[in-house]
Length: 83
Image (cartoon, rainbow, N blue to C red; front, side, top):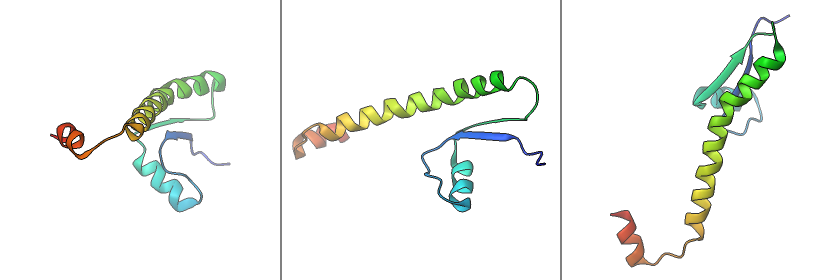
């Protein structure tokens, strides 16, 4: 039996193998770990809340980026935005 904790992380890396799992865990800004003891339901809920903050930010950023991508932009308007 392993003594490693359950680990959950909010990451943009799509995990498909051991290498990308390590990459995802190394790049994750928020990681939640807990042992398999005590009130598991409460620990899972706490993890959802902790990671939900990161996931909510990701959804807001994605919506903003999608809106920007749909905005028509000519050279003059682009130059005004960049500066």
